[in-house]
Structure formats: structure tokens, C-alpha cells
Length: 111
Length: 115
Image (cartoon, rainbow over all chains, first blue to last red; front, side, top):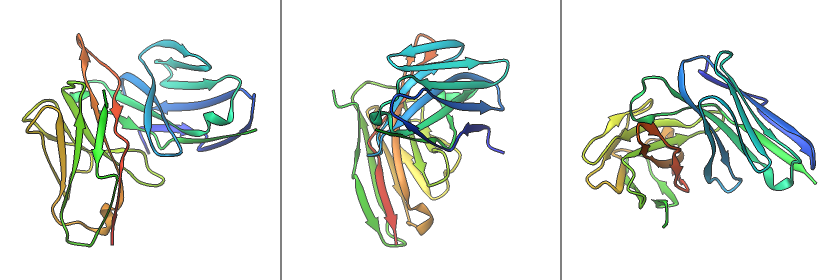
């Protein structure tokens, strides 16, 4: 079983819909990252969080350390949000800030 | 400020050939990483470095070697390429703020095909 599980694997939405992507992990962590991989392949970091909630524009990330679960929400989705969203964790007591990644969620937003 | 760059962007190798992938960062980051990304799997760490002159193995190091002779560069070598090494390779870098690790910055990727 993977240490980081994302759901759903694929998600199709209509423009304007509220979107939620989930991430569950089975190890103790010091931080959780949400990343976005564009259709062209580039990967950018969206959030890094260790507790609570962060917001950037239409994106919101939450984490519940006790339940070992995080969610990424996109409000008022737009076709340009179409990408793969990747959850990654930094396990506690891991040297060098190494990350363990989920398999990603492919999001398609149709106009 | 170019961030993290990778060369080459694409490469086709024959089985048994060798090559080196170059990663460069201009952010003065201490930590650098090489990942591979395969369909249906998450990014997997090949090797990483916590500073100039140091390297360490990740999850899938077999068949690869690395060197970090300069702080800004991290080289990934394939000594004898195999079809199983067909993948997209990403380099990333990171640093600390105080005692807290910051986000990782990724290069654009290198698509390698081994025939």
C-alpha cells in the first residue's frame, strides 16, 4: 500500500464548479505539499503546510494531522486549472527534506 | 533568475550507451534532488544531495550515479542505459529558512527514451 494515496485519480468538472481533491497518508509527517503539473510537464509548488489551512487566490489547502488527511479545494474552477495535482509528504525525521509523492489527480475542467 | 534548469530536454539512447543529465540552479540552494516520473506512479527519488560534495541514495538509485562538485550543479549519470530507464527525469532544489525546509523548485524535466 502506498504511503500517500490520492483520490480521485481522475476528475472532470464543468467551469465554475467547486472541486475537492483528497490526500491521505499513513506515516508521521513534518509537512505536506501540494504541487501542480501543467500539461506541458512543468511542476510548481502550490502549498506547503503542516497544520490548519492556507489560501491562495481560488485555491485552498487544508490538513488534519490527527486524521492524516489533506484536501485541496478549487473554487470557481476554470479550464486553465486543468492539470495534474500532486500531494507529497515530508516524513518526520527524514534527512534532506525528501518527499514521498502520491500518484496525482488528473483534473480536467471543461468550458 | 532562471531558477532550476535541466539539459538536455529530450534524448534517445540505445541500450548500453551512457549519458549525463545536468541540473543547474541559481538560487544558492543547499539541497538538490533527482526524481523519475513514470506513468501510473508518483515521482520517485533517485539520489539527492544536502550540500556541495555530498550525495545520498533515494528510493530507486540502481543504475544511476550522481555528483555535486559545485553547489549550483547536480549531475545524474547513466553508465549503461537500459529500456527500464525510459522515463521523465526531474531535478529539484530546496533550502532552509531557519530550521524549516521551504518548498522544492522543479526543473522543466528531461524526457529520456532508451531503445
